[in-house]
Every structure is written in structure tokens, then in C-alpha cells.
Length: 298
View 1 (cartoon, helix red, strand yellow):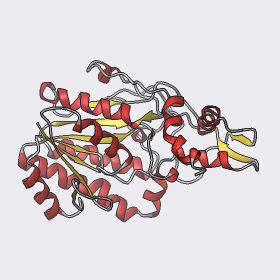
View 2 (cartoon, one colour; view 1 turned 30 degrees about the vertical axis):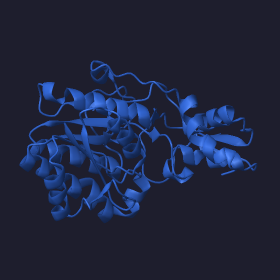
View 3 (cartoon, helix red, strand yellow; view 1 turned 120 degrees about the horizontal axis):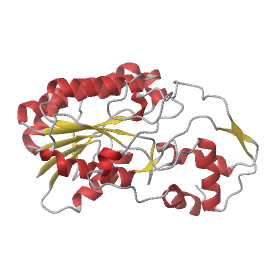
């Protein structure tokens, strides 16, 4: 099986690439842009010519499209750039999949829901509160209209090994453990964070089953097993790292910036039917991700 992975240098892309390389009988082409170094292929997904050249070289059976601007506040501050990557590039990739008879797994988000009526199911009504959610939902609709076969995976907040703490909104919280002055941390939205290795396992389960799907674009939902507010995540980070959290103050007001849903818990039974189950508890996973920074003093 030939697989083309986009966004291969991102938080999820790095983890997924490592797992895909361990699977026999898979020929992987991993594409990225600003941080691409060999053996990764450098490709600007907003350039249709470069996308077509990428497809002609990789000749993929399946495309896993993880590349996106996933930060809601950046989407709001750079709307044209975000639309170019999250919508226009997605349309270009879907069109290329159609021309080359490739299936497409599109990575979407729980932010397509408004968080007012969990748990959510694949057929639950969508109502994104922010532009990031709206762009990802637009991407879903585009691929279903253009690409003959594939799947959609809506994922929650991700965390895992990072190149710098600010790369992930979860690990970024840990910087507050390095100060002693009182600091407020959001204690409003309930999130369901999941380690990128667990998300990668879900993606592999979906791609392995793609040939047996009875519908053109089934929607899979993925949430972590336990709800956490950012305040609770930070307390857990302090516990596993042995750092004081006495200066951390819970803030029960909704966060500033782009609107966030309050609770987007999603039903994962469709993924479980493929044999998927999460393996990494939050405390275990976040400790592993943060220790390299705290051992070196950040």
C-alpha cells in the first residue's frame, strides 16, 4: 500500500510517520513544507502544481491529510492564510485524490460542534463557534463532494512530544510551573486531550479498514477517555513533575480570544468497532513529553 502523509513535521504528523514506518508492506511518502528535510518531501500544498507533482511521484493509494492551521486565534488573526491551507489546499488535495483514484482520510476537529449538548455522534448536528471549526467543516464538505471514497476523523485536543513548549497548547501550560507569582488558569471548558501516539493508532486502524467501508465517507470521532480543564491539566503536570501548583488559581470564566465550545465529548464506538482503544493515560503521556524540558531547566 502506498500512503501519502501531509503535515509530516507537525505534532501529529511526526508521531504518525514513526508508526507508519514500522508497518511492513507500506510505501510512505511524507510531505511537509517549512521544516521539511530529506527523506521528507517539501511541497507547498497551496500550490496546485506542486500538489500534482507530489501525487505523480507518490502514486498514493491513500492520502492522510493532517496539514492544517489548527490554532483558533491564529486563524482569526491570519484569515486568508488559514483559508488557503485549511480549505483551498484541502480542495486541491481532494481533487488530486479523485484524479489519481486515491482514498482520502481527512483529519478534522471536535470544534465542528458547539459544545452545548455532549456526547456527540457522527450524525449529530454541527455548529462551529469559531472560524477554525467553520473552516474544517468546510473542508469536510468539500472532500465529500469531490473525492469518491475516504473517511473523516474528528479529533480532540492533542499533546505529545514537542520541539518547544509553545508548539502545543497543552505543553505550553507547563511554563506556568516555572513561576511563583499567582497565575489564573482556565477552569471552564472540559477538554478530552489525547496523546498523538493514540491518535496515530486510530488513524492506522481507519486506513487499514478503508477498503471495507460500505459508505463513501464515514465519520469517525475520537476523544480522550477523561475530561480535563486546563487548570486540572496543570495540576496533573505539577503532580507528575513534582512541581508546586500552590500559585495556580482556577479561572471559571470562558477564555478570551476565539470562542471555544464548553464540552465536545464525542462517542468513540465506531472506532472501537475497528479494534481501537487508547493506551496512554494523560499523566503518563504528559510527563514523558515535559521531562526533556524540565530536566534541562527549560
